[in-house]
Amino acid sequence: MIKVIVDMDKCQHYGQCVYEAPNIFKLNEEDKLEYLATADDSELGNIQAAVDICPMQAIQLIKE
Amino acid sequence: MGGLRTAESLRRTGFEGEITLLGAESEFPYNRPPLSKEYLLNPETKIHFNLNHDTLQSEFVLGDAAVRANLKEQTVSTEQGKTFTFDYLVAATGLRSRSLKFENNLLTKRFSLRTMSDTEKLRTAISSGMKVAILGAGFIGCELAATLTKLGCSVHVIAPEAIPLALALGEDFARVIQRNHEAQGVTFHMNTSVKDLIGEDDIRGVLLGDGTTIDCDILIEAVGSLTNVEWLADNNLDLSNGLLLDHALHAVTPEGSLTHVYGVGDIARFPYAHRQLPARRIEHWNIPIEMAKRVAKDICFQEGLDVADYSPTEVFRPLASFWSDQFDMHILSYGELHLATSTKLLDGDFDGEFVVGYYRDDELVGVAGLGMRGVLNTYRAEISI
Image (spheres, rainbow over the protein chains, first blue to last red):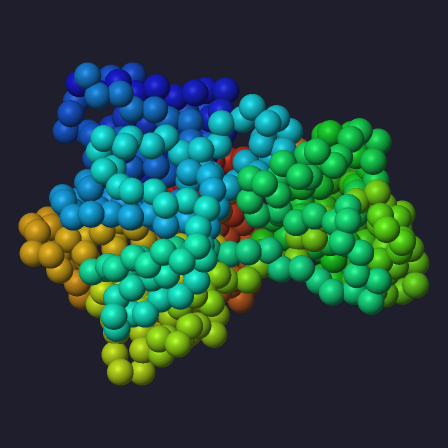
């Protein structure tokens, strides 16, 4: 399993992560970020890409 | 950042050879966008990238700039006299701030902003109530204007164009930014430039082209940058504007591409995949990340590793993206707005949130917006570069 943590104080809801890992991140109707806190290992590459691309460097990934 | 992302991508793609990251700055890789914003406001802001040394398995040689490369002999030598040999070289040396020369070329109380140490020096020099003159109304100039206003400074921005950020975003968008800044207390002096500095030891003001003077306690130059490519000289490369590359991001010489030499990031001048236009550099934050992935695949492919779905002839067609935070404005853009010959308001209105489309003839080459992320993102797939 992968644990996903987003620092919502840092997040500016740019939504770049949504394109890298669409199964994990989305912008809701108010353009605010929503995400799944845990993910399957098959999402590792996508979540890693989301971590890298986040303009605010607000996403953390923990492998469990 | 370009170097770090390349090393990470290499490991993720299966590269098992030695990796050395050679950096001119003594800091481990850090994120530059906060330098004009959060890090200037608060020295506690964490700006270094998270490093996982276990998976990275790379040697960092910091605080020692590359001064010469011999691409035939495959060596790089440094300021401190070290020499490194390589099988592959990735040039990701980025930019440095440009500085202007004046007749009264005072050097104290004069700043630029590109590195952590630049921000630290500026933070130490400023205090609430100070008068700050910023030369240049690009992203760094405007972001600094916002941050320094928040810190209680009285900010004057001086630039030769008519509207701040108009070159980057077009006039309609740029007018909104100017209005917002002015409402927060920033003063713009547009269509003018600084003719000379006033003061003897410390700066006291600037003299503008029209003869008026503006008092200031400090001066910040945000007037663009130069590419750090001098160390690559004498290798028959095209260094006229960064480092010229081919579609696979290999360095180009008149005798053909060097398949063991790559460029990544701000210095990388790379060709369009489908447009008959000269190769360009893109100084946007996501570009080194995209280039790093591509370079890592190409190196692993050359090393005979199994790289899923990769072919060296594959076109490289990254979607550039940038963002900027100024006061309560959060600007986001996709594409290459500089290609546009016209713009159109796609949604919202200029008094609130909005999305602007940038067109070259009838093709959408970029979008940019203030807020309205959901709408903005729906246009992303339509951009054709």
